[in-house]
Image (cartoon, rainbow, N blue to C red):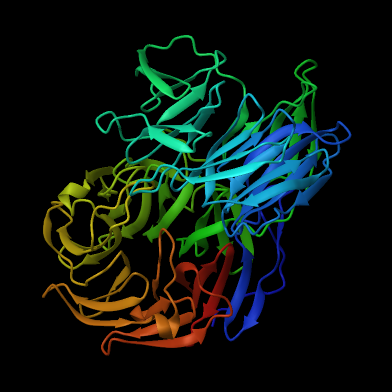
Length: 636
């Protein structure tokens, strides 16, 4: 059994960054190695003043638990205070927020609308609403705050003076989840909002009657999101999708008019935006140059003098959610986190961590030979990292980068769910769901020797399906398992997921079939020692597939015994250990598969629910739960 030191203190790379505690022995072979990335992500930051007129930054904090607190930081001293929302975030977080003309900070998520008053230093209003979270917010000429929500265009309004709150419910419904990313109100109090992504639309909403009217005809709608903005002339203007070369609509008092070109664009100032909102200017003219949640540093500059001041602040965090882990060629456990997007590496021999900025979100990771590969979101990109070389921040077009940017696959693949390192040592296959609003994801077959790839569209595999998991079969073949899930904001069009066999060299589909009924998605698969493939569908249906006969030879439901399997955008449910032993990661614990008897036996019940998989390294199986990394010693 490999010895894991339990006494060393580990640090994140970089001065002033938080400390990783030493590994904790949990008993029964389990160890807790700590939080992979013990920092949070901002989901809306605004510069304003508190009750004493002092400059403060308000920052919505987001970790794996959701939007768990609003952080108020003094721009002069760095003194900070956290204010938890007056409701359970339930893992949800802000996607839009607004700082009103009355110096109140509003957002809407987890089915709750809320108001924070920096003068009082408190949440001063909240109300439960129809599901779920605002994708856009605005303030009208009368000071009312408006919010339009995902997933079915819910509309709410709040009057800060009278404290009257109205929830109009879902006013425009579709067969797919909607992202209403733009909202504006004319000076006659009509509300207009644009939705996407399967088919754009602009909706006119009358608060007096509560009636909503879609503006665009079905023929006009396009892939993407409808766009609107409020002009200083009192009217609202919009486009089918935002495009400088496209024609415009004019909206006023609920009426719409096509106007073609619209060159005099003069938007009414409103301090609002998406989850990336960063309003930098304080009322006295100074501005936030930087608010770094990793370094816990706030930098404020004075444009008149050119001088800047840096202060340190602090906050608590449960850490960013881990996407999954794999063993790297340097005998470390590596992976990435989401919000913030970070790379981490854990060295079991020294009990030390390395943590760095990552190139976007590392959805799925895999080792092939002396390199570590990443399939990431957004854009379905592919990276190659050589741990033996110095880390050089990834930049497109910079061949000295390490990790090196190889290619991207958008819109064919936007969210990778599988990165298969083929046993030939040179071929990688990337798969996943497509871009926003699309249905059906394809495959990227990458050749490391020629450093080139071939992109295969979903129409050449199984139309309207995306590939969720892959196994390399003997003879240069691929076995794929699909999902009917569309791209984000897309429309589900297929009824049942399927398995398929493809020739890697030609990219030609040789067979496909719905071998199991009523399957939403094939979770993960593993090739056994006799050529049979073991897999899970919908995280609960264990099956054994014979590729030669192209049929399922065994099926059973494992949820009652073990709970659901581990799962994330790169699942890694199966872990292959020493001498080809096959282990399975369930919520309940770690099991071993008997390939001959088709039996699964629980070896150890985990002290925490296993969330994300999974890698074997030097006698231990590593796995994740939310933001934490754990391991279990495999009995000899």
